[in-house]
Amino acid sequence: MKQALRIDSVRGRLTLFWVVALGAALIAVSGLIYALLARALYSRIDDNLRAVVQIATTSLANDLAEGQDYGDAARSTAAELASRQQMLAIYDPRGQLLAEGGRDDDLEITLPDVGTIPTDAEMLLTVGEANDDDDRHRLALRRVSIPRSDSEYLIVVGSELESTDEELESLREILAYVIPAALVLAGAAGWFLARQSLAPVATMAERAQEIGVADLSARLPVANPRDELGRLAKTFNDLLNRLEASLTQQRQFMADASHELRTP
Image 1: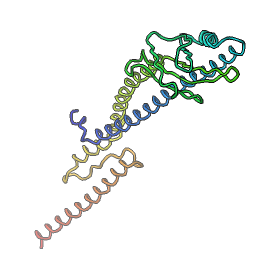
Image 2: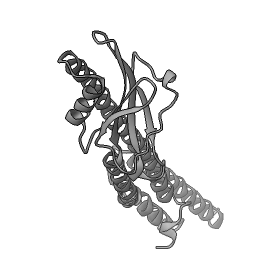
Image 3: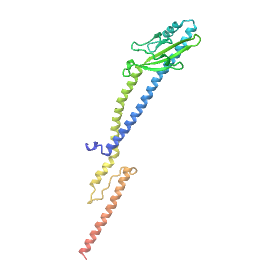
Image 4: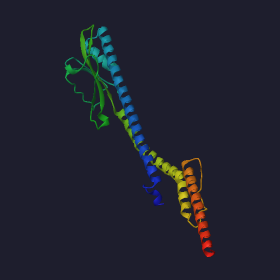
């Protein structure tokens, strides 16, 4: 049993190769799936943030068109669109807060230089500690102009990343258990298949050890003459046939020579 488990055996090398190859494939596929899923989840958050910025811009334009003043339009839009899942903050062009809603207590918003915030697209930022999933938030910032009222606002929309980070963490934990378990099962299955496949070789080796010069009539078993091992056994048996015939001829020659020497 100890010898059967040695890695320098054919069965051991085949099993090791199978486990290493499968492990590399599982890690590569799992990493690809994880990366694609994470990208899809974070992209969906970014798309939602962009959509809220567009909705907030439309809401500000409608409120101003209905006669609300500059600050009331900001407060009305923030109260209408902000929620526990979606933070909305509206600033004036100088970065002074006009209205906000839905902001978590642990979210501190530090605006970059207002001049660096684009007007034609959203600036996307991730704020919070990289190793603290509870404090991570995704922000979308954009300066918007309302043409009819000649007003300009700075809109900041935010969404917490805790739920998404927890989903990805759960996936990492699942993969951390599934991959080793799959490798253990694959190793056991590979060892069993290798043992079953090479069992005829072991049988042939045992039978070959029993064949001696005194008796060359024994032959190796041929389990399947159509596969490689069967052809190997047949070739070895043909060799034994030739050896037996040659030895028989040699013995006959020696017997004849002895007879002639005894009776010249």
